[in-house]
Amino acid sequence: MTSPTTARVVYAGARTLRLEPAGIQAPGPGQVRIDVAYTGICGTDLHIYHGDMDGRVSPPQVIGHEMSGRIAEVGDGVDGWQLGDPATVMPLDWCGTCPACRAGHTHVCHELTFLGIDAAGSMQGSWTVPARTLIGLPKQLALDRAALVEPTAVAVHDVRRADLRPAEKALVVGGGPIGLLIASVAAQQGADLRLIEPDSYRRALATGLGFACLDPADPDLFRTIADWSHGAGADVAFEVSGAATAVTTAVDALAVRGRLVQVAIHPVPREVSLHRIFWRELTLVGARLYDRVDFETAVTMVAAGRIPVTALISRIEPLGRASQAFSALESGAGVMKVLIDCQAVGG
Image 1 (cartoon, rainbow, N blue to C red):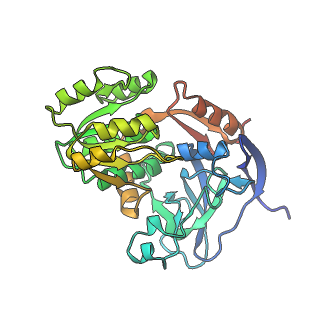
Image 2: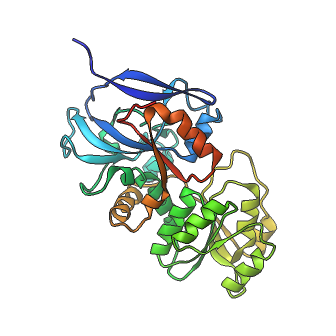
Image 3: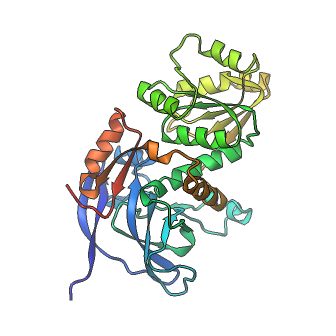
């Protein structure tokens, strides 16, 4: 008897993705198997594709973690899930015993396994995961939109870490998918927003969504920020771009006792004006990943149509065109978010 198979995309080394058949892994105790509908490509996936994360990713490995799908099989000891239930995965597997876990901060576990980086991810037709990572989705939520729950959860966590209050001046530095999601969540919190982004396509998309955008190349940038903030500066700045100049801009734009929320991952150390931090009594806040409450909030916001996820989806490609999808996202030319249809092999 032939075992059932599916297809998957594996990272096989720098700039090399390979489509291959794979056996379907039955869930063990405490596990579930998901028929993956869509997997989104994020900035971390691009870093993996470039070979920058080979210290954590061991080729050949399935990557991807922004996903949606339906329950296909339930292992022993798993309750509360039925076949066909729509779900997404919070891709964190923590140890439960380290100091961070004991303090309740499981998302920054000292021994954290991130599914899609440290272990097999979702860019495959069938994915078996620990049941505790599942997050239920409303049945009426389209699964392509649901694939953006994970990055929305990132944004929810970032805004929560900022302790953002209604009517505060919030500056988002970087208008990619996470920047726009942060802006969307912050707007829901009642913030007065400005978004800084160098790319004209991204500025146009953000403007179309109702956000006031600034060009960092504008010589009057800081005068514009001063006029907007009545000379005070921003109460909160979210640094989302990962560029050295963006860090400087974010710090220099903050008001006295302003908060810098560091969202982007910087692969190398950056110069930061400690004098500015001292002089204005600024606060630097790190924001990494999310808690379960952030995921659940993200599901509610996306399902209610409060987050413009549809506008962020630029294209959907089958598994067999994963390499082309990565190349399109890498080019940045008129592309915001690319999804992989994990039930379509194509090619």
